[in-house]
Amino acid sequence: MKAKEIREMNEENLNTRLEELRKELVKHNTQIATGTTPKSPGQLKQIKKNIAKILTILHEKNKGTKKEVRRNEKFLAPPKNNFGGRQKA
Image (cartoon, rainbow, N blue to C red; front, side, top):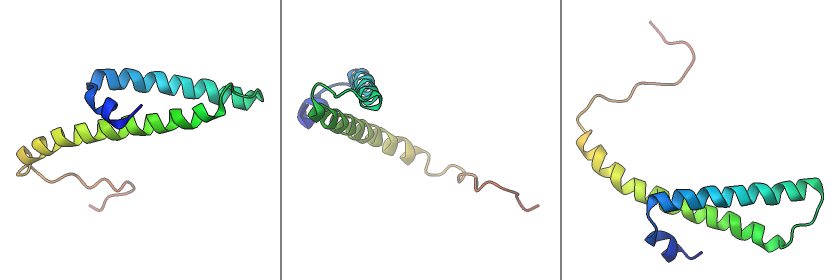
């Protein structure tokens, strides 16, 4: 898939395509783990690249909407300090 094709898809289609690709990747990885040779080893690399492209574009789309929300939250209370461990009294 080309990035241009992926950008034209809506988020719902991207998420379903992402699930399909991840299932294919698991299938290929189990074939490799059991010792059988995959039908086309180059396809494994292509699946991984497509997953990365989809995730990148999903993050780009979500980043634009988060900027708008953060502009409105600018004057709210600062985030809590979540360092874990004991807190000083």
